[in-house]
Length: 198
Ligand code: ZN
Image (cartoon, rainbow, N blue to C red):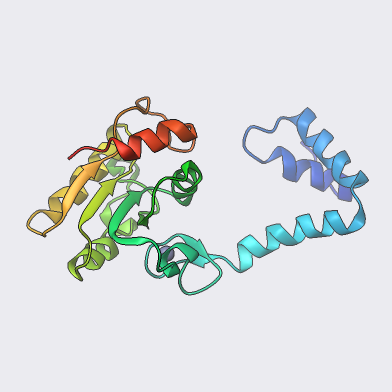
């Protein structure tokens, strides 16, 4: 593929580099941008810049935020005694969209994958343990992906929590094994939260 120097060529390349966007779709999107009103197109570009420059992990739960603390941690109406542990911010977003969970979160920033060199030190597990040691958390809900690595991650965390006065539950298995929380639909997620088990 020759290096693209024209603006439209670079835009097509940029779209083509996105997941599940083929060449034809990339061209269609690029020409769509070309036809967009000027303000709308600039706002689109700005939103990409903003997520890269302004977002950082919440210092408490590792959700993404523009402030020190994310909106969820800062929301005093939420139940701080409930903590749902998820792998990625997009899992948190999926649970939020299901709309029935009122507790707080902890985003691990990945899952343990020893074969790929992802050990506990690469995740926010120490921060999670510290958070729970500080007290006030009654229940930790493991919302890791229901597959080998996700289950392994949940087990490793559960073993570090042994001895702390906290109940550990797992999202109910309405979810297909291997399906990410993101793919699960709203109702399934709401059921999984309601039917969580020790
Ligand atoms: Zn937070």
